[in-house]
Image (tube, rainbow, N blue to C red; front, side, top):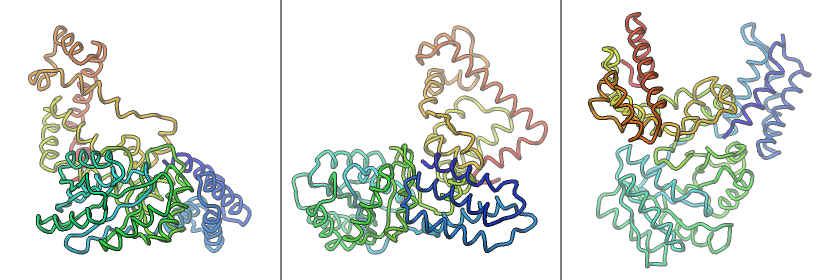
Length: 443
């Protein structure tokens, strides 16, 4: 999402690299470019000016240590200011009451229903009993969508398709939750294409009747400053407790994420991208600032790995790698786990320096499909002993997977090369160190 902004900020900060000291002139030039980059990213002009004025004031008020260059110092100041702009500290979701009620609001098309499903999955992974509630009384498709998502993540959905009173449905859902020991009730509400009085009255009545522990406003980050303006309108009427930014994987300039906290003075609590139910993250302003400035986000990457990978399975695979017994069954198991972590380009962007390196490179998650098809066309014996796959077997695998013999040969060669590399590393003593580095659970 922040690719364009990251590149422009990097270019702006390059003007100070190689400079021996900070001066009013070189800081003013750099700050001007930073402000231009923020405005180009659709950040509110007033917000962009306030931030860059703060950056300039801080830069001119500091002496540069001999071990720090002016470029490094201004990068740190910019990082700190972006972090402060987006809220400073991460704020966790509040789950008070029994059951806790979370009210989801936003315009139609913002991703409310999908987010409701993701949030249910997120809380379920934390060991909470969650009930989804369908209160979009205008769109039967929204109820059906929530039911599909609930089934997908293994969470019950409470719905009354014939009832056209959202407040009564929500209250009945809460009673159902109390009787059946659900600890959290997520209420998905109706949206409109634009803000109107009827919609505002309905969501206000729901909030008054339910007294939720959280009222989350879902924003489509691709709508830029329109999202910020809509959030302000909702907040003036609803006084929501937090913001959710969706569609961060889309072609958006990022202005909403950077402006919204300063404009509505409410924390961003979650960010979401894509359709996968695992693609939801708690929002950390400092981590996002680091990613924007190309410094990566290794902490979030490790947390994703810890959440996705099974500790016992990881240790088992490490042992097989050390003995050079890693086979295609293990490979496809790892591939499935990696896919659960989210969009591949986003994951690579969390590695320091990779954001810039990935500029203009399109990584399609569907590129794994031919590999999976080839492996799934193998017999169990072939997956366990890939070196025994002869020409006739290759021909059968290619036909079964809808690929070519060339693709099958290429995968087999790459897999064998990988096993040779593992074997060499183990002989040199570097294998265990590499595995420890890759293992999110440590030794």
